[in-house]
Amino acid sequence: MTRPAALEARSLCVEIDGARLLHDVDFAAHAGRVHALIGPNGAGKSTLLAALSGDLPAASGEVRLGDAPLAGRSPKALARERAVLTQDHRVSFPFPVREVVAMGRHPWARSPEAELDDAIVDDALAVTDVSHLAHRTVPSLSGGERARVALARVLAQRTPVLMLDEPTAALDLKHQEDVLRLARSHAQRGDTVLVVLHDLNLAAAYADDITLLRGGRVVATGAPAEVLTAERIEAVYGQAVEVLPHPSTGVPLVLPIR
Ligand code: ADP
Ligand code: MG
Image (tube, rainbow, N blue to C red):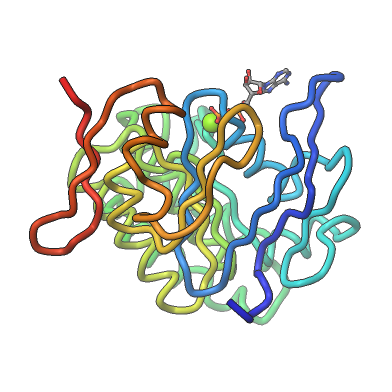
C-alpha cells in the first residue's frame, strides 16, 4: 500500500507503573479500511488502542495520526480527528440519552459544524437504533442499549478516525451485525476504522485487515485469510480450531473443535 497510514505506531512501547505492556509494536491502519485488532484477554488490545488514541503516552517509539506525530496536539484538535469508544464506556449519570449523545458534539462547539448538531445527533441515534430511547435516562437502559448509546455518542463526534474497543461485546446478533455494517459504511466513506473484536468470524467477515496481538506484541498482521490460520489461532489462543472457507463468500470461518 503506497498511501500513508492514517494511524500508525512505529516501534511503540508502552509502560504503566514500570510494567511494559506493549513491546516494539509496528501497526498501520489506512483510510477507507476496517482494521480489526484481535487477541486473547490481556493481549494488549485496549492498551494499543489507548496509545493510538493519545490517551496513553509512548514510553518509546511513536504514534502518528494523519502522517504527523500524535504527541503535542491539543485535546480539542485530537477530538476533531479521532473518536474513541472505550471498553468501560458506561455513563452512569442520570442524563437523558439524547444529552449523552449530544456530548459527542462538544469538540465542534463554536465551529461552523455546530449548526449541524441536532441533525447529527438524530442521525447517530437512528443508526445505532436508540432513537426510541432518546428521552430515557442512561441508568435505566439495558447493557446492550447503553453500549449502543455510547457508540452513538462516538459517532456524533463525526471524526475521520473511529476507534472502537469491543463495540459488539454486549450486543445481540442483529445489533452486532449492525455495528459492523456501520463500521464498513464509514470505511466506504473514507474513514479509518479500528475495531477490537473477540469474535474471529465477525473480524473475518467485516475487516479488510487484521492485527493479532499476544503478550503486548504483534503476532501477525494482514488480510483475514492470511492472519486467521488454524495453526496460528491454536498457538495464540490455546484452543484447537478448524478454519474453512465460507461456501459462498470464501471468507474464513473459524470453528472451535469440540
Ligand atoms: P486486552 O484489551 O487485550 O484484553 P489490555 O490492553 O487491557 O488487554 O491489557 C494488557 C495487559 O496489561 C494485561 O495483562 C493487563 O492486566 C495489563 N494492564 C493493563 N492496565 C494495567 C495497569 N494499569 N497496570 C498494570 N498492568 C496493566
Ligand atoms: Mg481490552
